[in-house]
Image (cartoon, rainbow, N blue to C red; front, side, top):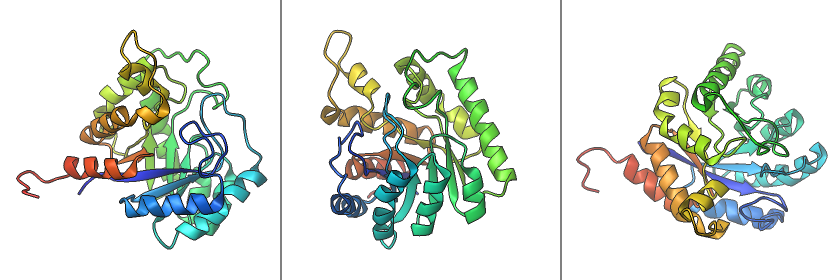
Length: 263
């Protein structure tokens, strides 16, 4: 069985990867259905940008952005909601979402109350502040400890489906991100299904340019996105969160192909 692919659907005017391209609900729905056709297992709908430096969005506005899109997509695919607000998560679940993708790692009570899945992600600070000189003594040990604690708390609280996400790019330097990717097998060994999202992130643009070249812009980060997604899946990640669904589904199919397969 291949690793799962979660498609990113930002219903926002300011997300780093698409800059408002799918802010209109009809365009968002069309993109969501396109991702379904490309093989997405989950479509992750978010109404608040979590790019570095992003400012918070009012709950009522976030609710207005995501609920119609979730309602329209749920007959076609499993839908998750990317939010850190309990009221938005509850509205999204009522609209049909069955997974709460939670960068705050705090919303497990919503998942427990409504019988849906929950993703606990590690983040240092908030999107507004997270890249202001992030520091760790041991990034791998600290992230693992945090995620183990939150996952066990959620399971003890009645959540049946708990995922963990090391939060690549969320309060981490490029060196932190690479260390977490190198040590993913250790996080996988903790026993919780692991979700990894590296897609189009800025550290890929900087690293792929080499020491002297300019950072690759967002539109030119497919190679790095695919490389790190494949790296994560080969290390045991059960799902990757991506913008480029079709290409990643092909990579996931190869990673998940049984030994000796002639297909």
